[in-house]
Length: 358
Image 1: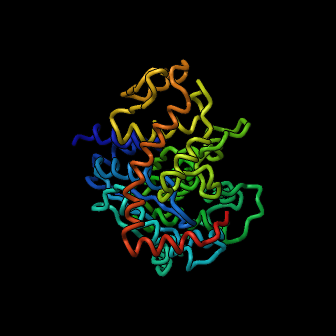
Image 2: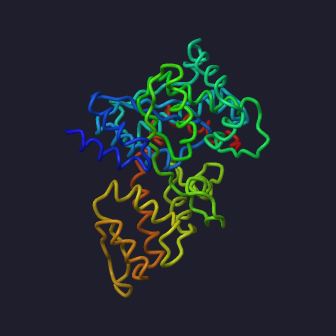
Image 3: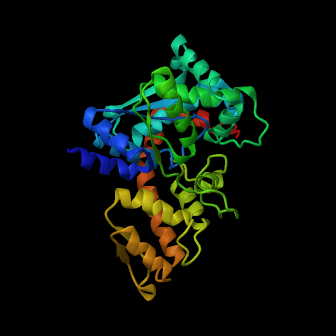
């Protein structure tokens, strides 16, 4: 595959690429660059972390990348997730891996790395301290949104250490590409700025789209990135998230209650799922409806669908029913895995019992 074709694949993932010129150079000089993403094991996985992550990872692999997933158990501990219980967090990390095993991710070229292993390396902590020594408190505080916090919150000291750890992860994993969500870009920029000072490789930042939650968007006029963070799917708001182990009735119920105003395309989570999940997995979106309402209709691309929806040619409930059907099809292999695999089932039963803390 030629370089431009590889770049076009990466563009399917990257809502922002910093920078495209550096990406071109990297792909011309390295056949299999290393991309990484990190996750706090902090409860059940939703479709943004499951289906969307699998789709993006597979595309990056198709473009020639090798992928490293950091199971950021110590980071979740520092961030007081699951009540700050490290053992529970690590159990949730094993559950995360079981989800990814069953959701269609190409695991042949994926390596799972646990932060619990990184922290045993003295060189890792040297990187953390060097990053901390060369970053102001103000700069680090601006990065706290990477862990779902805000600058004006009363932060614990462990949470101030978190961005320094995440920046160090990139270098310790020898990642060429930090391929995380748009909400993580600030720490990627910090890593890019500090890399030359220590002679470390400057990582590319390729930020993917953050899938919306199902709730009504709040009023406000934040910057594009800040607003996307407020709108994103979150396990701390379970009624607005579709989890990878939700049953059919739960998915149908959540989708039926989702924000999806007639004729409104902007900030519509149902259309967001169509664009970023369904049309990336299926060539056609088929919507079943009674003959008296026009009968079944098929859409081959997102533009045609949104034009029809904006014109009022498609009822919100008909769209919702179709989206619920496709999401159920996509999570079914995961449900089956956790129902039929003894190890996975035991892990899930444990994770379900954990108290989710923000």
